[in-house]
Image (tube, rainbow, N blue to C red; front, side, top):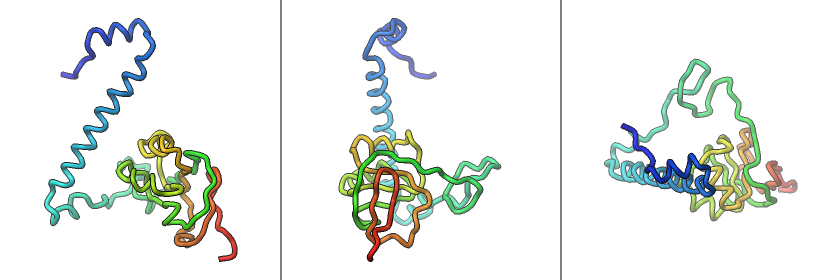
Length: 167
């Protein structure tokens, strides 16, 4: 059986009392945090020799045939780029400005230390996007970043990444 809300919460919800949205968000965050703790413990409880097998990327790709997995190697789908949080930053791509394949809330400390974060794929409402907005970190999802730019000086300005000339 599914858990149910306490009677006082159900009554407050049906009456439309203010503040319920904040309560729901707290409950959601509590469940999400505990789920992340479970996965963290599972990952670190796994013997080191078995981790490569159990935590390796899945070889299947996402296609219109219904496969769940997506690793960006093949397929007709193309992610669209969008700005997560505005800002203007200049630095070395891959060092000062992080270039990530996907947004991962587990890399919170890395995101905090970076000047900006660029992801090759991600969702507008994903946990990683939400985290970057909360950090007020200049960031975007840009699927077509030229990998030859890694290690070179670039400028990120409100969702666009430009190579700094003269290098």
